[in-house]
Image (cartoon, rainbow, N blue to C red; front, side, top):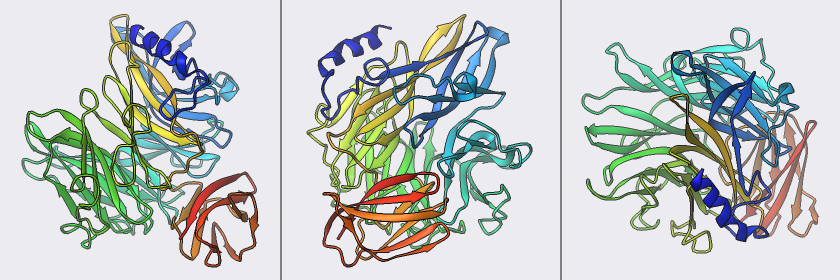
Length: 498
């Protein structure tokens, strides 16, 4: 407990502070909310893998739970719901949690603000915000997948893209993608009967890192290629919406980063003007320090040499500087979270220069783990960022985890991300010159656009099922607020008019 106590003591000077990089002490205990479960007097360790922020700012989190000791240890997939202050929401399933025996939950993806998909290795589950299974989906709510899955995302045309790996006939793992329709049937127009395989190369195995859909519905697939026993390289593929290699990108649809040593990537995003940002970690030399890596590519897959130093950032933070999650804000700022043995948030401006007004020289690095641990993901809400991490502890000769949620201030003002996951709402392009497209899986009832001083703009818009087109050509350049309403809820977004 020493490191966690030290963190809490250090943060007392920030009790009334909202300075960028400070802990939000209104959340949990001085900014940190830790969770295990005790069920029928049996301790269950929790390892959180992903979470989603609901419209009421509650948290729906998924991961892996363990109980028991030695040979009696059992594993479960868990869903927990937290209140906005980080406490367990005991109104959820009459206790705050749901356990699924022998499942291993990896990620959660919103289809809208009420329906979610949970990835569990070889299965996909569909639930609502109360944790109820949709038994019409798959086999009593469990859809079997033809690969080992790690992550699922929604595409612009209402499909579900799932990334992971699949073993070939030679017992070698290969990176794999599959795409399904909302009813769980395979999208046979994607790849080969709904499946795309990145073939294994002799002496150079490839592992899955992350996936992203750009504003043209193309697939960006970030991976690590092991080129020798102690050396891995970052590679990024771009596929068309049908799963074919996009030959207009880099070299035959693949960007190979040969600059770093022992490198890996976990996330990739696009900026509002179509550039590609890759987050990872690695070394500059074979014996150099590990550091956070950022790479920016032009839309065609060439290195953007105007970004940072010749297109690259290398920033040692602590230990391996592992990068887990990447966010691009509406002003182009870049935020990366991650860490191994510690938890960090790093912020850069749109040019890849460290944000000196955030934390200590652009970085907040907290030692949250009592023993050891790892970070998984993060989400931005308003002017804060919420991190998910796991700290290990010993229990009856077993290593278990306590799930941690940690909330920091990113800014003194409200923020918006430029590249949201395609789910309940999506706006593009942003910045916008003329027409703004607004997509929702729920029917859009009303779109209102306001100036930053609250004046409503009288604009023409066209409604179709799930899509609204607003003509902003008559507006002056500046920042505007878009309010999107459905029968279920509403959301506000910032857009920049060029």
